[in-house]
Image 1 (cartoon, rainbow, N blue to C red):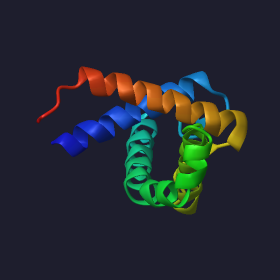
Image 2: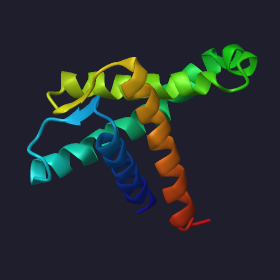
Image 3: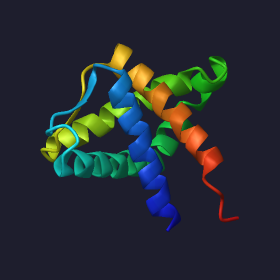
Image 4: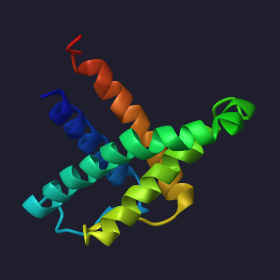
Length: 126
């Protein structure tokens, strides 16, 4: 149940980023069943990337993260969003992020902030 709630929260965060930024798009007809289904699939892909790839990248870039006082994490988050876009395109999912800056960079910040706020609002099972 917690996995489903987190995936829905990620979908909401992605939707907010899509609404605010021109460089992040879902090319399915707006607000159709395909649009919402695409949003959920992309949230699932994004969650899997953050669970599998991101810890590896953070471990490899630990020195740079410390050297930049954590600001390099913004670059890593933007890279994870670009990787999500690339994987989506490989599976013909109609989701696209145009470029690193400003789309992926600001999109990652928006997604992080919205996910954080939703995490505060959603009660924790622990």
